[in-house]
Length: 329
Image 1 (cartoon, rainbow, N blue to C red):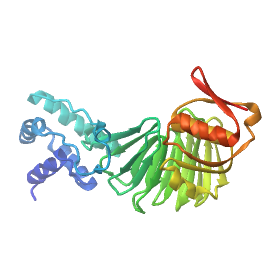
Image 2: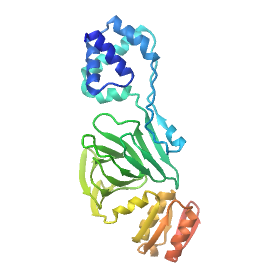
Image 3: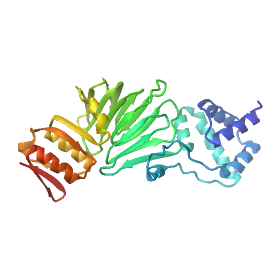
Image 4: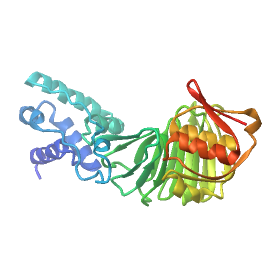
């Protein structure tokens, strides 16, 4: 194929976001060689502004609420008119091609793949299936950012809050969850991540498979791995990672639906779950800190019902005091 025809083909692929990594490299190489070729500039001038950046379709499952499908972040593309500005663009691409190891930046700059955010309000739970088949159960007061389709050599999402993941196995494309400075990497497994921005700890609890966690702190990366029925506790204030056994990890299969079954859990742990699920602040009587709770709580029920059940079992009382809730003997 002649270079001009090859360039036209690659340019068309590029406009419609169909370039493979190798084709993208060839496109910039040919653009570099073309310099300020008039025919190429005319081609780009007449087609660029006529091409719409359409989002991917058919990747969002039908069981999501309509509003969950509409929160989309799309790249903004400025329109350029006139030959002079196109010469400037060609010159810019020429420079960028010379430093091709910034390829990921260039790709992101021109990438038309839709980006989405799924958020959940207090007591609200949402389920999502990503483009690779991975299933996500989002807990209340949480936010998941993800692409309409995964590209490059990894599958990357961002989580603020709590979610349970069932990751589709793909050894060639690791699945990565970013939560601040913490990255959780898996190939295919089921696990729970609790990573609320306002809390100083992040918990990764593994039900099946194997998970690797990395904490980046001042250019110093700390790593650890866990297997089934283990938990990693990442302390953001001390930049430490602690591994503990967690034999009841399978309970997260129910917790992802809002059903919490406690078998002798410290009352302080229970109230922390209530704070996360209902987005509230609970002040616990110091005499109750070491008390343990046996029973189940439905975190999808109204808050007063959940507090009443907890207080009945624990033989305590609760009240609302200003902007917080207080549990006393």
